[in-house]
Length: 173
Image (cartoon, rainbow, N blue to C red):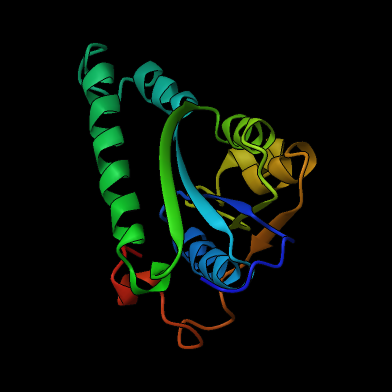
């Protein structure tokens, strides 16, 4: 680990496995090495989206919701493990958590109750073009307003060739 500057000791990195959140994870790992900080990687299974799928009949039968949640938790754990095993995560102390709920609420709650010094997250995620964003704002904007600690939002690099993605370094892009 890097020198312990005392500036940041605990960094929360919410991920949705989009290219933007993978870039945020890479940046958080670099910061953790520089500051001697530990990282908590967090994925939130959006129960609101699951409920909407169920209401729209996109799940074969309502009982599929439990099986779907189980599959989503399993895939989230696999994807977080891929991030942990990536070359960018070397020499960084990592913990992981997968929770269910509203993403911005769960992220803000984790930041406040977990005594997090810094949240590092993608400036937009997998659903950035949705109607949700137009009417309700992005998850990143809501976290900035509610986290109770500094929040660093990380955009994608200007061009894909500028930086290697986490996928090229052992993780999933």
